[in-house]
Amino acid sequence: MENIKMFQTTPRIIMGFGSLARAVDEINRLDCKKIMIITDKGIVEAGISEKLGALLKNFKISFSIFDKVEPDPRLEIAVEASLAIKEEGADLVIGIGGGSPIDIAKAAAILAVSTGDIASYFGIDLIPGPGLKTIIIPTTAGTGSEVTPIVILSDHDEKLKKGIVSPYLFPDVAILDPELCLGLPPHITAATGMDALIHAIEAYTSNNANSITDIFAVQAIKLISKNIRTAFANGTNIEARSNMLEGSLLAGMAFANAGVTAVHAFAYPIGAEFHIPHGVANSIMLVPVMEFNMLGNLKKFAALANMLGENTTGLSLKDSANSALNAMRCLVEDLQLPCHLSKFGVSDSDIPMLADGVMKVTRLLANNPRNLTIKDAEEIYRKVL
Image (cartoon, rainbow, N blue to C red; front, side, top):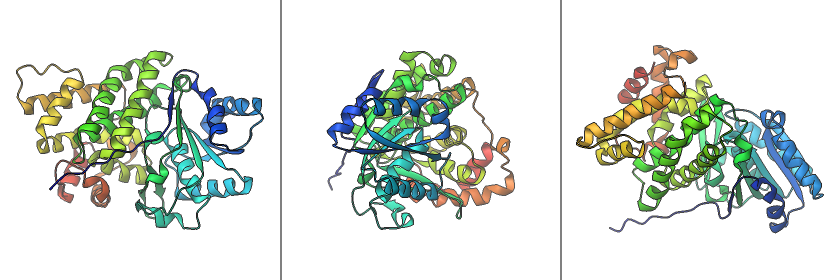
């Protein structure tokens, strides 16, 4: 039986130092007249949204700003943003910031023209049609959401993070300007950079990986692993920032098509219940999940070691895979990221509930290279307690 694959991504990507200025050309090309900028308070305080606003004012482009996006945003924020878009009569949405503003922008652009309830869109291919035009401008080298058909929102009632997956969520334009990343604090550089690296690692080892997604995943792993320490230690290094942003983009392209696996499935419950930042949650769970998964595809996990700069000459596949684990342990240590859940108030009594949450993320577990039971999930959580 033929194995049919499909590859999709954002149709227009603009990259390079100072490329934020190209936003005006793209707005004119899309023939839009009223812009809603969706962002958060941090981006406003950093002066980044003001920079974009000044650019639009200079060209007499009308715009409004919605800056109420929160970390791990609730689905209610997407609804509130969509109401603001309708009230202002905007015909284009610009999402600028990290993963949270980007996801809210993508979701709100759909909701602004839809009569459906947002809860009805959680799942795969449930959005009935396209939303407003979107331009996405990431300010972290992290989520890759500028090139994915995915939105992740928090449902506080169910204490879960839920995904909406639809090709209608691909932005019309992505603009990647490394200048916007220069002021990113080291701890955010570390957490978001690890998130991007994990996207690439999971896409590479996913059951849905193919020769096309591997091209993007491998290059992303190499770019991020070679530059993340420099970006963390010297945030003004423009070459490192540029390479990190490109690596995050490529990782996004890879996982948008191959999917992520159990690392993210483990990160979602602890993020929703204990409000652990997404990149940090992924970093904590990465090594124990990799250790569990590697038997499912030793060849690929062994290949990771070379991509991460490890010398595997003369080593067996299993020993090579173990050296990849060691490389990731060292990287997490160098980036001064937390390694234990107990730091965030997680106790042993929470583990059954969290493991149950993992098993509900069936969309991601289907991609995992090794079958996972609830007992496995509990044991993996306990390794990093």
